[in-house]
Length: 341
Image 1 (cartoon, rainbow, N blue to C red):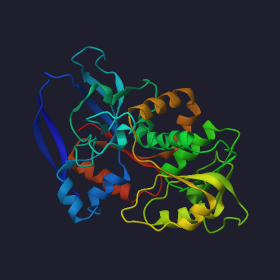
Image 2: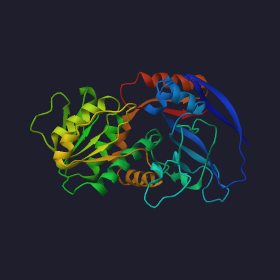
Image 3: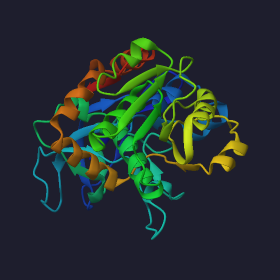
Image 4: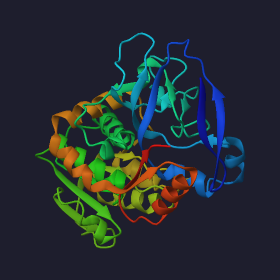
């Protein structure tokens, strides 16, 4: 069959390409229904990844957050119309120690490998997780982002000490919101504190115990463990502030991505015996854990509904451009594309 792929060929320019795909394989074919725009997609769209990265990655179909419906399963395991979330990480090998999302050989959609902006997605059997039909599709569209927070928290739980009375989350954006929410649901008796720059964003965190603007943090405030969800140049000052306010032998989970190296106060990391835990992306097990968590906590999904920003019906390439441009001006939440092209 001929599959249409909508690829970014240069900043702010998409073109349709055609790929001949065979149904004579074990791949499950999924029709995308709702897709969510990520900051990483925007860096490609605007060309801010840099000339070398752009030349290496493009042309490429964007988007790695999305859900869809099964249209063909050669084995008949999944019925036509089954709602699924698609796992963008695609491993090519297994390792007893290294998780699939850290293997250098793994491919990741919309990062040098075509993402979900296609008529149909051909997926290995283990790259889908079934969703309940009643789940809000606008929230389900960015499950991949939720899995990143879930993955970081699961890694923290296996590596950090057991005193978990107070958590600090730095970053008042989407990832900080999701991380704080999972922590509050997972540790209802613990205190969760959010640290951010903009008060109007902090006002959205109605479920946490305390909120502080980063220039108004009490000097005597201390936390057991921290999660950094700032990224970019701001991650340096965030990590520095965390080091100042964390108890000795606490852990710092770093999630924010920076294009450039940042300085870290290694002297105080050594003096306090701090554990740094890096985490990136997620794998199938994180998707399974996240979907089960969402099934068990309906109020969790309701809170996530406040992250849904603009929803765009996409039928043409111009609609795609409009959605990306509108997302650039959005100050809060996720932009979702209802994929009808």
